[in-house]
Amino acid sequence: QVQLVESGGGLVQAGGSLRLSCTASGRISGILAAAWYRQAPGKERELAASITAGGSTDYADSVKGRFSISRDRNWKFAYLQMNNLEPEDTATYFCKFVSRGAQYWGQGTQVTVSS
Image 1 (cartoon, rainbow, N blue to C red):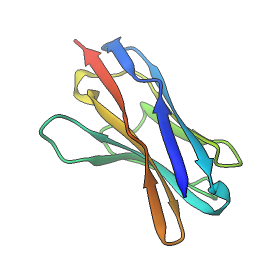
Image 2: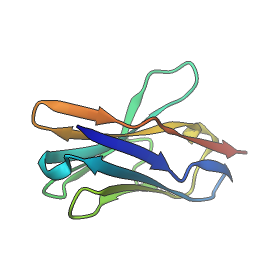
Image 3: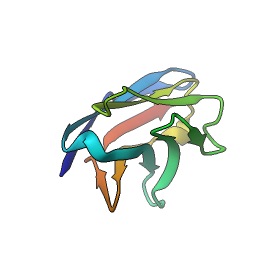
């Protein structure tokens, strides 16, 4: 089992920045990829960014050029640097770790961007 805890959310003005952290514990040796998802009120959960063991990254079109995903080499931490935030980025942000045959989710951290 892998346990994930997100942190770093908060209230920020449009144009500001936040850095989200995802702290992993448990059996992290088999992790293959990590991702950040977000879910706004009344909307489906959507993928914001992902990163593989090889370091390949992928981003939703809506966050490209503004968000950056990274991780430490041991999969103890995953990060989401969010710059030039927009009110449309307001959502609960969740991290997900993927191993062979399983996926793990954190409880989420709230990000609110005021206009």
